[in-house]
Image (cartoon, rainbow, N blue to C red; front, side):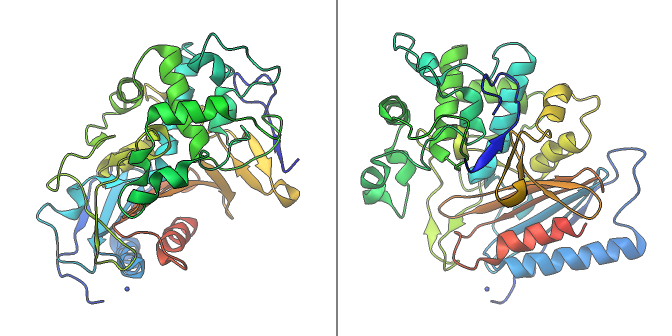
Length: 376
């Protein structure tokens, strides 16, 4: 057993270039009363310098580092490419796997409202006529990467190969994801091993949609986006005036807008920096939020793994210790963009870092964003 699961609601098993000169620097007034002020005086100068260094270190065509300290927002933009017609801080960026933080919050809210328990067997949701296994894969297993499913379904690479540099996920639609899951036979009992799985979270989305009789996009809008007033967050691209354009590893080759195919729940969300800060600020201070119960629940550790159980996971976030308290974060990448979302309740800080270049070996973006938040 490579990991140890702890009880989760509903789980029956309890388990690079010259820079453009248009760098934006946008500072808002404090939005959360009672917290220490930020962005003023010496502290503000230091924050701006750190943001400028982080944007430069990311080495991408378009970069945004958006920070909230006790509700006061500071956004710094830059990049190696000429500025786009729409200001960088107003564009929507592809989150890739960081979309799973929205998925986790949605499932937590559906459970809080009594619409689901989390312990539903995924097979029973997707094919009610099929006999349920004695140890079924549940919605909780799928979300916590303990389902026993591989990272991607069998046949994904062969199917996606003709579009490998453009949109391989688009060639694997919902019906194929569901069929691959129903055919899969896990090698290990669900809930006993941790293995990060885009496949599993994609199946979760389809199982939840089937169990509720609602489309995934509608569920996310009704139960997360609308209550949190995330009007600039969506699952589909709208066009160059609204969505940031991705680039390949070289930072120059354009990449088409990401199409998640049947993997919407695993990586389809795109959002503006300000919407992402709103999302993260809700996690920092759930009090008074219409999703307060769900927001508190997605902070709770449910799984520990690795040597000495040092790796801690909640239903939506990776959790690492700092000198002052826990830090919650999740990264993501598509074929042409990257994202890093994180928050620290101990310092009242949230970070949404975004860039428009495909991940590459030794990439500085994630490490820069992680270090920035860890030092806040």
